[in-house]
Length: 234
Ligand SMILES: [Zn+2]
Image (tube, rainbow, N blue to C red):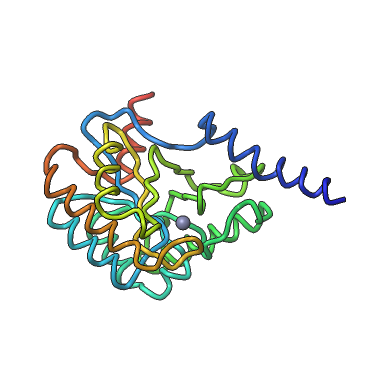
């Protein structure tokens, strides 16, 4: 009995996650656009850290993408509105930060729909992009995620751990920001597995990176990167 449950779990959760991610089936991880890259932020918004990032992006003319958790968005409607007004893309990161490994397909749909409804009620525009928490997928993810576009990443830098430190994070930014990159960072440390103050390092490292590499890349939202990539393929 236990073995059957474990086998079913592996078939439903682990194998599809590995297969879909490694073969890039129906997901977007990076583009081939030269000179452009995307900074994406999961888990927010956060009352303290997200406005600091928005100030920074205004200064450096960066357009970012925020994959927000519905229950955090609900508490911070002004931040959601500000993201939208300042030209950033708002995507879905479930209503609660729960893994698709433990959700039935209709529960995945509900998580996405509830978050999309909430964002739409705040800014009048429905999100079209979705990044699953931890990048966890399941056997029916393409049905569950419909009609949203599944976005993963070209590099995930481990910034949810405070012990990574600002300098190592900056080094990782320098290594992984390249043409067409989609970089995952975090603007909130309240979700399971994250350190509460970890976004302090993220903000410091991104600030120093932008100061030192100003003009090297055009930081655009995932929407711009995605649209350019798909236009160029046609
Ligand atoms: Zn997350």
